Length: 392
Image 1 (spheres, one colour):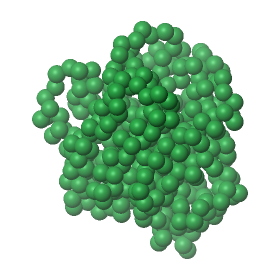
Image 2 (cartoon, one colour):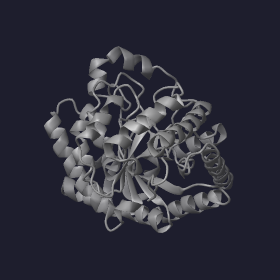
Image 3 (cartoon, one colour):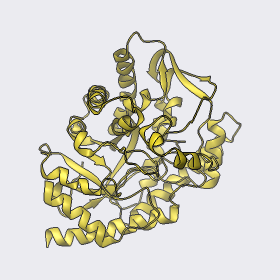
Image 4 (cartoon, one colour):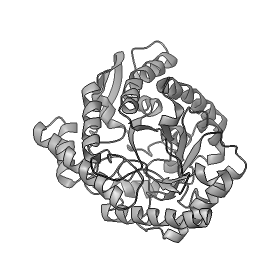
């Protein structure tokens, strides 16, 4: 994994908006409707080529495929794991990522208003996923298509490094009921061993693996009946299975991302970084990506003034936000980068984003794609300004 040894490198979290026509294909695919598979694969290849080229043109150093062929950072895995089946379930009460959460309890009127927005996701409602048999990985062809498509798109493009995201054990577990394994630990172990195949394929292809694990941080908000201590114990246990999934993959080929989801809301119940950072650092990764630029978390750079970052590790703080259409000024981005560099060392900071800009494929993303590209351009300029400050 490349570090900022000569200048501040830039990256982002992964997901980018899908073109409208590709969204329509993804939506048809997710809902079981007929679609042209040949046209779909061709459109994915073109979409990946477009976002790869755009990232590089705007000065992003460590780039990915934008998750263009995936309906969502979690939903895609249902096609790649055997042992699960979707079962219809009657909707009862509020639905959505904030259902039953501390946030919903504090701001019911806000979330009721948000729920009235027209649906724009590819997610299929009124279904639950149940584990009814042995969990195995069946996504070999799919992950190799992702790899081949990405490699083709990288041809002739100037970049420092490339990564591919994959979902965590924790987020696979979330929303999936176990009706097969005798214990929670057996269930988690089976998930970990299965998803390791995808992790290994990405690394063997020469890419850095990014493990997406927002659930590690959002569990506290989602479980208002549990104390902070109980949520920490839950998270510590999950990290053990994240590490089992990583297995023998060298830490310097892995970056770990956690955040507080795509919720553009009050966010007063986000778990503070100081209460999760020690657990996050137990993940066998070479770099850690987290939110650091929105108004609930920008002050948390102070955490790194007292927390010891293990030797050989790096951080990827978010210096642009996924929760506002405001484009951050490059000088502010530079200031954010410099704060972290002074705390942990300039070579151990890679400038990134708070979260993906299209974690769930949507026809109308909350942050308009044109704004995302402007944010990336500002990110690259901010890194250049920070480099002048830090290297002279």
